[in-house]
Length: 441
Image (cartoon, rainbow, N blue to C red; front, side, top):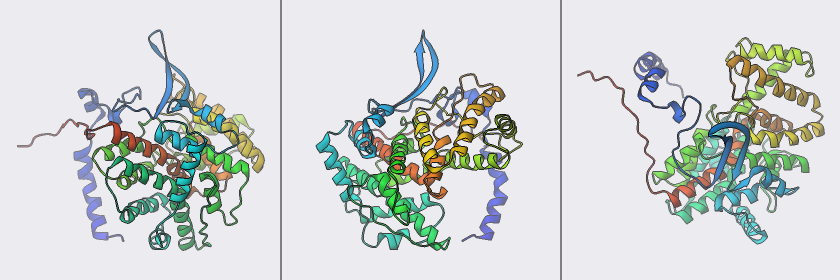
């Protein structure tokens, strides 16, 4: 598909674009405009109101903002309590109902919701063959986005009506695992010459169970594996509303566009490495550390190598320890705290104690080194991406599906925000940009 003439022309024009499109930091300071809608302290500019979720990273004490352990709330419920409430059961479906409709379901409401999800978990006739299996690629997010947009062609009623949007959102939540797994199997078969498996999701199984069933050739999984995947999905479903992909959902929705377009736009945002691909970088970094130390227990050796990574002398040369720090949380990421205990259980079950020891050592050592090196005094802590890739690896999930798994969870949050935007807002989101253009005539 590459056009040499076009590629050469584009390369020639690159310097011109850099000359005319670069805006220095000093201009943002001069005009009081925040890059990326965040001030110099990393605090986001308020762009809306929501009742869907809440993030807490500071407490007010004597008029001062004091960093605290992070908290994540869904519709008034602390995410920790939601996980405890689920017990041994699967919490994805219950939490999806909560985020979409604002209340926890009773037994009858949950049963009815699960029935609707099961009934919706179907693709149009020959869709897998004619859409998913055509032009397979390692970029599963692109494959899924193509499928989402194509599903609009099979919908007789594509408009911004709220009840219609609720129907479409539930449909997408139910089929996202199929779109992801089937896209991966198509790629794995046609591009990597492996065997093809297309397993149907079964009624009465949770999203986590069906994902593992559809992914694995033998369709087998343990109760612990499914439960931990369910928790990972629950923790990734929503995050405060201010993240890039959720904001994208609301921006496109505010323009009056349809559900398929809004969710596709969110997918395009999430696939960006600055948003949804961080856990892959953590996995690559940990592999690199293993290759350059003698033991996961040698703390001094680990510390010395982490210093090299911070100094840009090791790994990818960017001077970053991936999985550490967060734009909002400082003392701790509540999702990482919840996930860590389950990771330890899975590592013990999989015989991965040595790997777990390495993760724990990096988790202890890295924040201190980063704080010293970067002079960060508010605190540095591991984020949810630090352990999520390790979980996926232990579950035998290929890296091509890491970001799609994020999407399988986050489509619930996107859907909730789309509905809230449709119901509660009436104006198109239209931010202002100040022109610093030089007039030439």
